[in-house]
Each structure stands twice: as C-alpha cells, then as structure tokens.
Length: 249
Image (cartoon, rainbow, N blue to C red; front, side, top):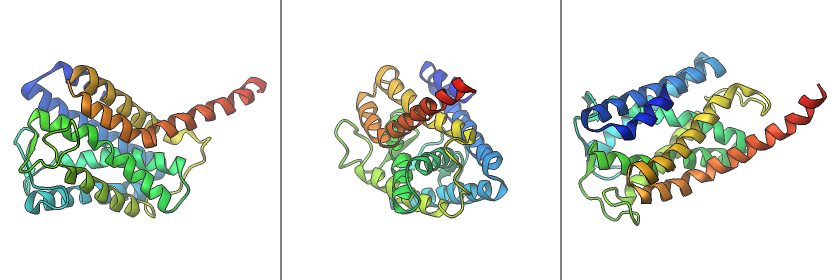
C-alpha cells in the first residue's frame, strides 16, 4: 500500500495529492511502529512513539513558535488539522523514517557514537528530498529561505542543520531504548531495510524524472547514499554468504 501510494503521488495534483501525502505518512508510520512492536516488543515500540512522535511534535512546535532550530517557517492548512501550528501528521513522518534509519545504523556501525552519527545522517539526509518537495507543493514556507543550498531555493541551510541536530538527539535517545540488536542473519529487520532502500531509490527517481526537482534528486542521492549504499552492499554480501550454505543443504 505504501509503495502504491508513493507511485501514485506524481500522478496526482492539488487536494488529491495532499490527501495522498497524508495517507503515505500514515502508512509509513504504521509500518515502522508495527515493525518495532513485532520485532522488538512493546517497550521499544512505546519508546519509538515517545521519542520520535512526541519529540517530533515538540521540536516542530518549538520551530514554528521560535524559528529554532530550523529557521522561521509556517505550515499551510493542506496537511490536515494542526496543534500549536503543527499538522498532526508531521510528527508521524519523523517516526516513519527514524526507525529504519536507526536499524540501518545498527546493522552497519558498532554501538556508540558512530552508530548514533550514522543513524542521524541517515535520517537527516532524507530531508534533502522531503523539504524541497513539500515546499514546492506549498505545504509549508520559510519566512527567510537564505542562505540555501545550490539549486534548492526556498529552503534555508539552517533547516538541514536543524534536522541533523534533532536527528542526533533522537538517535541518542533511541540508543538505550530501541531493544537488542539482532544478528545479521536474522531476517526480522529486512522489511525496514527494504523500506529505507525503496525510499532512497524511489525519491531519486521521482525527483529527477517526475517532479522536475533535479537538484534535490542530486543532493538527496548524495546524502542518503552515506547509509543506503553501505546497506545495499551489506545485504548483498549477506546473500552471497548464504548461497553456498543453501547449495549444500
């Protein structure tokens, strides 16, 4: 359902596209929280909701009210009901991508600061796709969008730095709460790895071909590649190691 909704996004416009955006976030949220519940248990899933959903709402409310840490911005009314100026769907988006980004980092990096840093970059780099796309649709707007990254007008650099700051805090909070890391041969986290890689590949394609946003396609491709490319290589090596065992079974 999530993949179908994302495929349909470039084919729609106006209010239909806005409703599809909300539906996509809801589906992503259910997938991530549902996976956390089934693969890790009630406490890690509750921690994910508390940290990512609750924290996401708090940082967005702070941002709308004060301009910190993202810069001054305002949401339109196209993404549904708001609380404290924040559409209720927005914190769900933080949660949707925070969980797969954390699991990717847990697979690729050892426990400690390296894992937190990779999870933060893996999450924050997603915004190189997200913000240009949502600003182009008019879902939110910046009061002062300078300085901006080359080719990405309408979104200040402060926004990406704010994303990275909050992503670090979020990953650091998840570290003791996310439950045990599973063995690489354990397939329980494969759906979230697939979600991360699909988000990466489909975003590059959509921005480059369908949404006429080539600069965000390039920036996002480079940013998310920090986590996505090593993940793809790691999964490929895992399949190669299993093939001889499968052949002799």
